[in-house]
Length: 319
Length: 319
Image 1 (cartoon, each protein chain N blue to C red):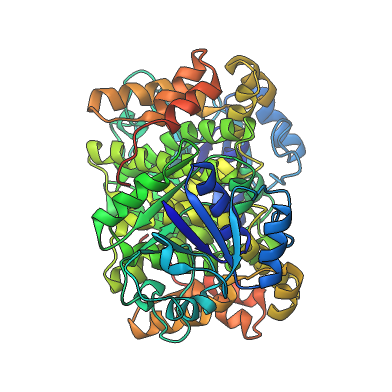
Image 2 (image 1 turned 30 degrees about the vertical axis):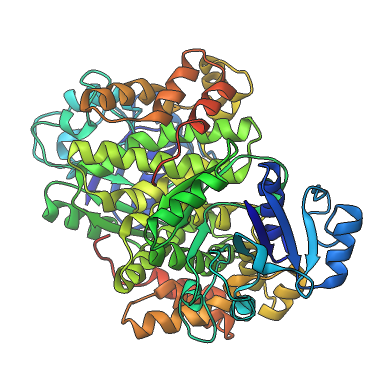
């Protein structure tokens, strides 16, 4: 399959190399022409995953790319840039596969809804780019309202080291992908406050419960939240040393401002963008999201230890 | 409340100290009289959590304990010793609260079913004793067929640093507590083989899915598996540096025998006891438990890397 991966960040680069290894014809489309030129010349991304061999991938700039030729458009840009990329695509009916984990800041809704004139699917799961680039095994889900499309993409992408499962709950998979980064900011804050693994597991479990409540209000299926896109991705995002969102929460709990945390991490930290959008979505659906609210309050200047104390002092209930 | 905590291991000791801090009248009943004597004399457990202050707890030997006086009997012994302790209790109607995470080797079934003549409840969740002993916050569930009993125990045990939720799905909570240790052996093996956090999250997520399938066949509720006793406890058991079961899986994947792993850890490793019992339970209920089967095959001598390859090469499916 002729695949264009749009976005030369770490996940776009690792995903492009993964597909090229499986004998697809892959271009990596970079928004920065200088970056595209360096990858084409050296076979390596100058900014992210510098060890990764990209020599089997054709690097081109977005301005020069002939996206009308692609049979599949995989989009791997920050959530705030997703709408601009989609609006700039040439006419055509090749499907869009979103690799993006966030919400659309303009509409406050799911990113796949921004794609109007093409079939659309979403790939998500516990997939830290650093490990995929290193050749380690992983598993993911592909979700679409169009199950035949999801199954076709599953078979195109499946390999012995990248197991792909089909999930027809597009709403649930997209909400999981967006919300897990916000919960990871909270889990990172628990790390930063030195509150221990029991407390972190409690925040994550109650965090997954609030994700599932939001999903329920939005029409998602509960099983999705215990699957790879939900629990699976939440786990690596909250525990792995590769996780930027967990790290940002830790830095902020130790006194950094959100801007300082962003600057130190020097890659997109989607949870910081998504948190207020998710809070508004929860409020508009009438869903109680205590951890998301607590994360937003800290991002707006509240003391992290007070936000945690507020969560711990809620009245005892059923689970 | 007059509480007898039976079992002087790390969780029994930490739980006794937690209750004593909340002004309950607590005895810690040790099977080893020498250990009881040392705790009574020094205020510290000579074997586990040596820093923990047990001076507010009355340590007695099992032979000397007057268990007929207790208003609550909390049992914190290894699963293989649970039946012996329960069968030796004097007549009475004080409830039993099980803190044990495993299955009954004699019947192959849930531990609470061993308790015949008294009300019974189970406490479970992400509760590493080391952290509770250090004063860090945590959350847990109490499950019982008798919701009034569970609610009464919730209010007796709840404190600002130990949040207790009620769950009426006793079957699900007990199966979670037993099976999570087996999945943690598998997750530890992924660590031992250097397969990365993505792969570990995939094993844990599919592990939780097989736990929930078993629960479904046994009459449990699916929500329990995404709650504190399921996902919550699974996470700390698979990720925390305090976890003995994770550590045992790591050692075995690196070439140790199960006996060598047990000897190195020098505390009960419940997953090693539970794995074959759980496999038999799955087979008797006609439930496919691929990760449990793979763990058992490694405990019986198969190569860990081949067991993992077998899991990764299963056919692509829906999630």
